[in-house]
Image (cartoon, rainbow, N blue to C red; front, top):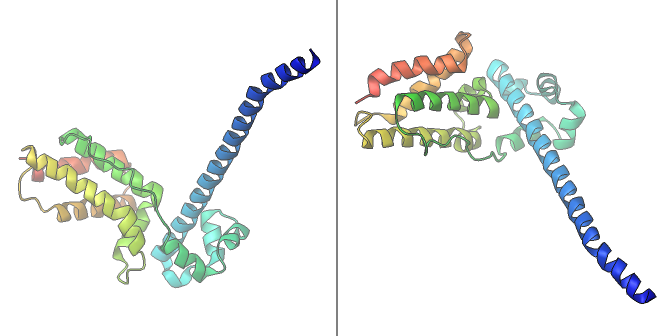
Length: 218
């Protein structure tokens, strides 16, 4: 009788222990994911600050002290990641970026969705590398930021081209459009708007849509 009672208690505890272990694993996984997100956010702050320095003062002005001041990331945190300024520049230049969040596959080619796409482009670039940094990255003649161009800018360019190609196939947009020039025009206008005006990304997208539509509509 006593043995049966012990067995029954043990059997009852087994599912409970399994649930506790599963809950513990879930907590650990969530903690690791939060840590990874914090690290990615810190790396992004460091990169954006670095690009801001390059844009305003040149690459020779980049120091860990100045990056810490501009990014708000503690010097001790930066030094835990990088041995020195050269190591920081090298690793940031070659860091892996997440896939583009801009996806135009579900956007029917029309005027309203053109505006939405332009807003999304602005938001994505601003969140990932900063609008001011886009010009720095694209104008670097020595391929220094080639990885960022390949992983951040080129995918957006491809999504934009796909949107216009579908519009051409549907008869919404004119055939023979120079899609490379259109993308360059969008990027140039976006950067000029950020640097020279106080327009919001939403109001810029409306004006840019009005301008583009007269040139691309079939």
